Length: 212
Image 1 (tube, rainbow, N blue to C red):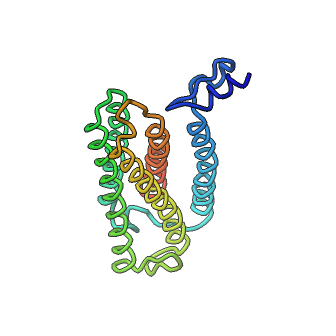
Image 2: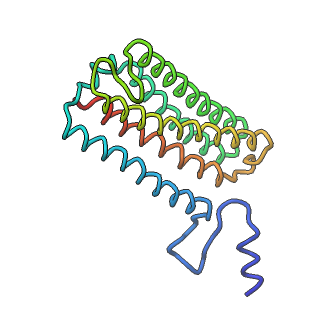
């Protein structure tokens, strides 16, 4: 009994649960991340639902016109999708025990996240200074549109920043050789968060920027 418990506690990577097929090879870290993402998804759902209710009951501007087009947000979407692909390639490199590939693809993902944040900061600067759009006021339109826009995109931007910092920690571990032997468990958990951030942005981009 005690020996079986010690066998489960001493591990490197994924934990196996031979007596419980429901868990299969899911690690506690992965289960914890899925639980976190589930609660986080509820937060985004609440924000988007509030946006939908306000939009249905209040005079609402055309987002494309109010935001001065979707060129910047389109680039942001493309970059985030590409960074999600590079995260997949990073995990695949780890499975192949390609240490250089792990570090390179992870670095590309991190750079993509920073570029996304940089463009978002530039977009905010443009909206505030050129269009007079702040969290509380909007000189050329509905204040509710302004506040919901900054609340939802800002909340997502905070997730991107958290994800980038998370990946920077993974990169530090990669430099130390943590994943050289093919143990991709931690990278997979980080990838779950990053893919979630990507998926949520696609929803935000569609609801906030595109739907007239």
